[in-house]
Image (tube, rainbow, N blue to C red):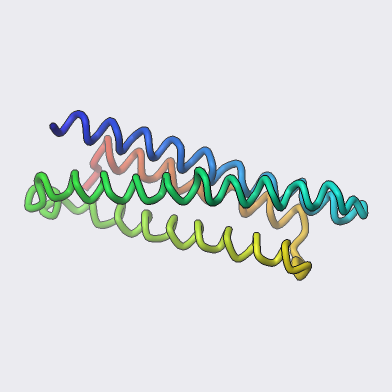
Length: 144
């Protein structure tokens, strides 16, 4: 059973991170569309962002959490005896926060209140990359 749950967890992680990488990139392009006065393009980005967030990003995050909790439950005391798991779980909480910050940015675009530049969104886009590297190292190297 464990290999199946782990496989589903990893598949969900891949889907979630694909969306976490792509949505802020859409924000970059959305910002350019607004800067150029391309209302039609901006509306298209709103639709793309909403569908990505609701159709892929949020369901993937939920699947990551369900399968991750399931994995923890299978061997709870062994995981909790290792220090790396606490750091990994803290980073997952940060990612959940990042996920919700993406929603706040989407709402600002829809409401016409976005004040962030494309440069901000380019930097913002790097956050999940750094967290992904840390989580993979923690999960496989188990440094502490």
